[in-house]
Image (cartoon, rainbow, N blue to C red; front, top):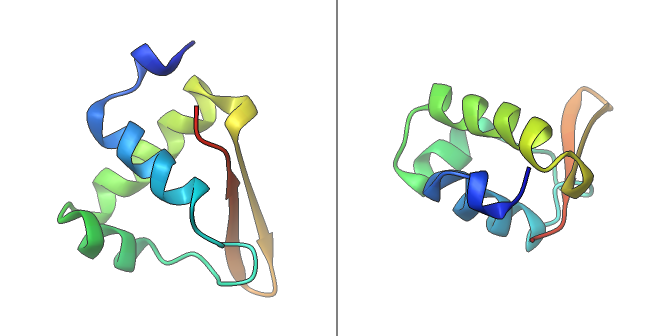
Length: 74
């Protein structure tokens, strides 16, 4: 899949993830939902879609009780 397969929100989320440090700073779905003015469900669905659509551009892991995300923009 390519960038053209991403929804507008998925593109914006990937760009935000790639410019943020969610390795040192734990990820917060609630904060992401507030930042994008969407529901937490929308954020979870977009994250899930990104791991399928651009799997080489995103890595999600779990460390010290928190989700960590590394991403690179397309």
